[in-house]
Length: 323
Image (tube, rainbow, N blue to C red; front, side, top):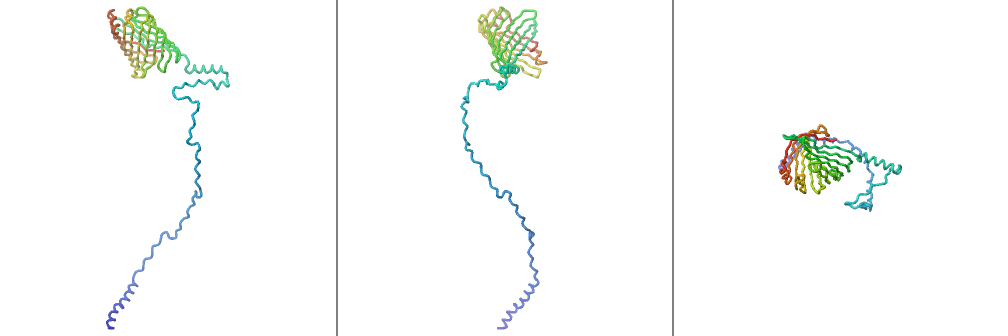
């Protein structure tokens, strides 16, 4: 029994020195890694410059916010209210004589648009060559006055060189501006030719229509009670700064037949022209062109009965100038 116990304990006795020997030859345990920040001290925190400051209190609410100012009692109502009167209490009159300042204001108005001016405008001065007799024609006007009121003299006519004067007329008119672009005109017109001379009361207008069309018209009432009208229009088409193409048209109408003047009722005559002008200066420009005239209705019938031409087309050569 004891023998068997010794045999069983023998392995344990042998294992104890081996374990001790193995423990003696085992490698030493690794040392823990050194902390790279060991020994470092945290820097002191800077003091907040705003520490201890307090936010300012919000501004007090405006007690008048949301209020609307009442409208003045003397404001005129909207719409077509009359313009306020021109002020008569001039500040300069506190220190200077009233009459002297009135004279100074009148002189100032004259120098800034209240002056008088004049102009001579020769719209057409031309010759009309033909195989029979060369003809001539003219149309122009003279005016004198200011921006609002003017005296206007007009003249127009035509004839043949070495022959008869076919027509000639003169007008004396009072012209008043009725807007930025148009004038109202009234006066008298006197025809020297053809046939018996006649005098007419004249009412008309003259101005510049939209897109710069020059336009004028007039109604004439003769001393015999004959009523007629005339309308003219022209346009300057600038091909260059100096070369200008000018189409022109004129029509005449009559309310009564005037057999002694060869005039019928309705549309009596029309003239269409096209002129090419070269302006050496704005004040002077020669031109060449063509002009076509034609009579209509009863006026044409009377012309045929008298052996006259109803229509006529001619080459024209002339000049346009103003002074």
